[in-house]
Length: 462
Length: 116
Image (cartoon, chains in turn red, yellow):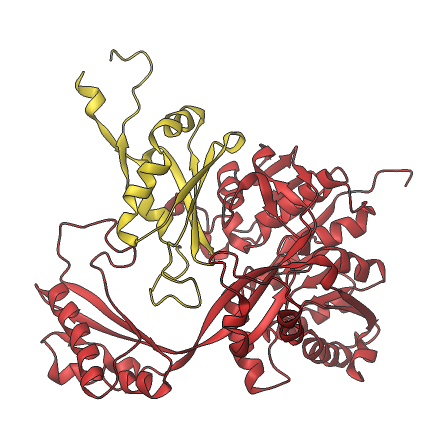
């Protein structure tokens, strides 16, 4: 390259599945973006997608995404829309791409190249790997994965930025992946744009740090901010944009005239969000030293990240597996009165006792009195007793019938519990499948990502 | 002399954010400025944080310093009663831990030039 490439403007319009539906549309319309990213996959989301896929082989992806594409299609047709990189494929990238391709083709975007990244789904390999002695021990408890092997519903490795970059270099304007590291959604397009070397650790680390800041959407731009009462228009909070430069530095900002705030404080708080050792923030692409970052205020709602150091990542990738773990349900009622807390605790015990007398000694149960300090139990004790609280009773058991029985014991409290119980109108709770989460590490040489780029029209006939 | 006995809410000196990684939680604490950061270096130790959250049945607490950001990261083992998809708690992801930690009372900083 003879002249340095201009910075690439990457905005993240979703921080989880269930995030604001309008945010990605507004960000794409008003953000002047080169790339729109959408990060949908929390650990818990994989459990939900696994459940959906177990009921329907064509499900298991983020259905919000095709709906968003439909809304973005006019922008894309007029050429004003950004490229899109998203992990909306979830547990079923091919079904997701088929749905998206139909929508795009119907909207006159049949010629748009769509890239699909797969290879993260390793569920089918687990039995053979157990047989071969591959170590997939739970990395917090050290238990061998054989303990839960017959109950596994998903097992996905975190892929990195390289297959995303490969899809973009291959012409893709929409890239759909399964499980990839959140920060890789930003690093992929930046590395493709600048043609970075995959051993240029500091550049990779810089873009990954920017990706980490924007991956949770509005959390970087005023969401969760401690001085919330003084924010401008939190209702119209702008979603975050990273302007990543060729040296790996970046500026975090948000669309002009949007609500919220980008400050050194909002960016610093997001840098420390959901991390372990900050000097080794691990991604599949690079270990990022978040403690090396220098933040500076460089204009209204503009904060720069400079000096990020990186080093080579380890030889193993993170695997995130989900296994069936019985059934769960949760019931809520309001309890009112000068002795509301005592009544709520008694009512909770009564529910569990009645389920026991009905023949089901529940494997696990929890009574919480919301309003009496039970959200962070025992840590902050209020001296004033609240006049009204919410009773929440939650159970888990291997037997669906036991949890069903529990679900039928909430309503009777209204006539056969202590006085002052209200609010059962929200309906009887339903048993939901419970899932356990199994994090492990898998050797890189066992993982092969696959990148396919075809026009939307071609994807409809795959 | 009496000033030394004064206590202050952590929330007067810092802001914070928390979340989950499996059955671990982390609480990132960002000090308001360099002076607050240096004060917290002494008064917001692993032991202080572990004692504060003891009723949650937590395991070990590790503190990591991030002086460039005036921040500390606290990683708390076994904080979530099984983690996001398994815990029965309402706050399965530890989102409320940061706000709770800001209520911690610690010794108040002694203003510069103030007789001790």
